[in-house]
Amino acid sequence: MPQEVKHRIYEFTLGGQLIHLLQNTANNTHSHEEDIPLSHRTCRATLTEAEAQANQDNANPFEQVSISDDDDELEDVWNVDANQDRHVDCYPDTKQSKDVRRRHQLNLSLLRVCRQIFNEAKGMQYAKNTFVFNCSFVMERFIRYRVQCNQHLLIRSIFMDIGLDHPATLKGWATVINKFVLKKLRDLTSLHVGLEQTFCECWIRDCVYSKVDNIDLYRKIERLGKLNLKEVTVVVCDDHLLEDRRDIGGWAGIEQLYRWTLAEKQAFAREMRKVLLAKKENVNEEATTDKAVKKEVEKKEDEET
Image 1 (cartoon, rainbow, N blue to C red):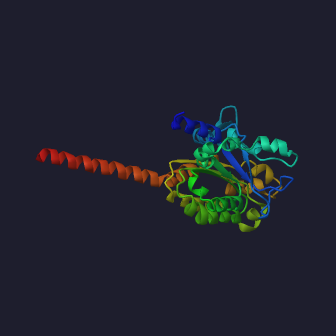
Image 2 (image 1 turned 135 degrees about the vertical axis):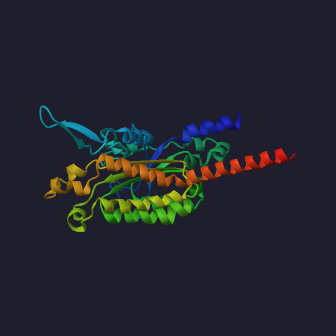
Image 3 (image 1 turned 60 degrees about the vertical axis):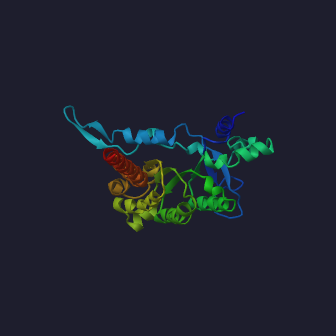
């Protein structure tokens, strides 16, 4: 069988998945204890991140509301309903058995068929899948373990599913971005970012953060623009922000200070994608310039001869 055909079979069998990395105890509760092994689960979402990005980009940020028989006005839209809770089924609950969890794991049995297939296909599971992290500690630990076997050099695509519930949360992500992603995943070409705004009560009452502060915090993610990324999606949601904060006194009055409208989410996502893809655009511009210069030199040489 031609090697190219075998390569496509390996890629189809071992790749093309979103792999959610977990660090859960026996009853499926998240933990930061080092003695708990990492596990994984293939994505159950019916919506790809590219589709979620398109939904966000194309959604109308305003809706027409009738305030009288003869008068209408436009109101802000907060979210894209189709994007809400798209990964809610990707994480096991405490009642699922081990057999159920195994059915949603990446099947690597192909690598155990024979030594030849193992040697030809090994590493495909790192190069052809997207690894999803919803915890900076798990992301740091996963990359650190891959470095020991040089497997980190194969990783091309990651998805950072960031639930922002406190300023300290993003600081943890900023640390892992600086120390591990930028230094260890230098060949990364695809980046998906999901920003889930679920501010904690102390942030609202005590920290007194505003929308401007939120943007400043998110800018730390833009350091990933140093990589030569070819594909970037940025989807911003606040699925449970309103319902979880109804118990905060006076939330309805301060909602405009903290919650991003859909128009603000769209604008922020466009700007962040532009920054993260800036290096790729610069490389393309330089390549175009080099070609133009080369063509001009060749033209002059032809005229001289």
